[in-house]
Image (cartoon, rainbow, N blue to C red; front, side):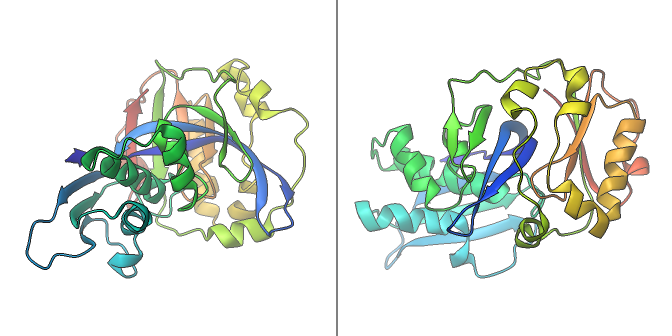
Length: 277
């Protein structure tokens, strides 16, 4: 079985308050985008096979394979449903440490793959419950549709309308720097926004620049000026709206027309891609 876990961007990210458990409440729009990893999952019929055997390909992943979220997703379901051993091949194409949710997406799609492969008949709600145990934004990738998110990024308001970005072009750039999410949170100052994000996102796209912000930019940009420089360059190129995604380090720009420019020359030594939405 082969699946293609996709990335997401954050349209706006307001850190509204620090919780008693040390986490932060936030509000953001999670929007799926068509950059994909490749996840192959098969039952392992080899003699003495045990658990989840994973092979990683593509972007180098630090740490032990057994700590990968995909393996943890298997372990989570195997403990409850006594699953047969599986063999997994994960090809990473979504940049790591980019604020694009690549690892979370891999984990959520692994849950969906196992649900289908072993005919567990788990509902989306049940899969979301399992996914939340793996990471705050993992559950988003179960339904995988644009949504207004609150809580720690795990409460989804599907009843609130999110405008489609269809017809726009998204230019995504990731500078070659790593932003620690923990450090980004430690420097942010939680505050209630002057206008609810769900109202701002339903304003015309031409007004987003003055309405929608990412609170992490205030602390991340001084430490990593290259990220701010990328955002400014996207606006110079004619972006209607540009922002860092999540806690970085990727930045995206939304354009009404596809930019006619050589990205390799404009953003040398950076991951960059142009997508039609």
